[in-house]
Length: 323
Image 1 (tube, rainbow, N blue to C red):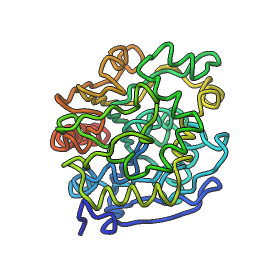
Image 2 (cartoon, rainbow, N blue to C red):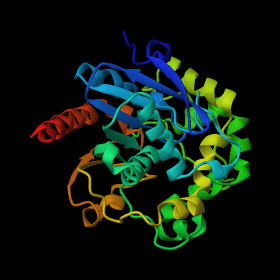
Image 3 (cartoon, rainbow, N blue to C red):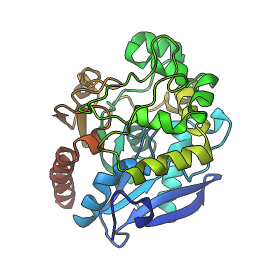
Image 4 (cartoon, rainbow, N blue to C red):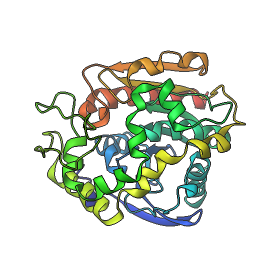
């Protein structure tokens, strides 16, 4: 029986795919309705703790990998061993290993963008996609640097620091404080700036704060444990992929042709709803929703709303697929 806040209560599995050892959660594996849930940074599979049991009890097989660079999955040192094509190959290799031919993909943060790219690289393996917070964007048609991306999207300016070697040291020296500061709900009493506007630090030299009331101690301990063991570098390598992702994705169709549900968090500072305003230009089969009074950690800030949207959408997706 799953205790959503106890990481040990889930069905942990491991395999070797695409040159790495990959960890994943696999709940209700006998179901023929598989879902692939993809996390972002600095998250882990446990970011889906409010959804995993809920979805498995609805009859879905819920597959939740720790992505390359995170948690119990290997974290290659070299940033060249990351990128959307590489991580998508990790995922398709996992599906091959567990003999799942077709999935519905649900992502958050980096996992949202990966959901779209995975479906573009392997369209025959994906039925539909939901993304929380991260909008679909077509691949860049020409080479671009992270600095140029930030000029287009100024709210991404924090990524310049995350791509800098200083961020790795900042997090590794202050793991607990980092997670207590970054995992905050919009409605928490204590508001923390993500990056100090003067020092640009994430945690170094900044005040510690109590954990969010929405964050169970066992959950926080798990994040701290695996970031301490693994180090921050693997996850931060995702922010060093601008050139890599151009090369990987430049020949993909700019139009996204899978049924898509986009769920934005009204108060998300990193991925504000305005970023999704033009998605319909590139995603013909699009359903949009806004969750009010939620910040970036929408999955556990507003689980009832997220789960209700998923239940309704998945019901319709699987019903239409049978017609």
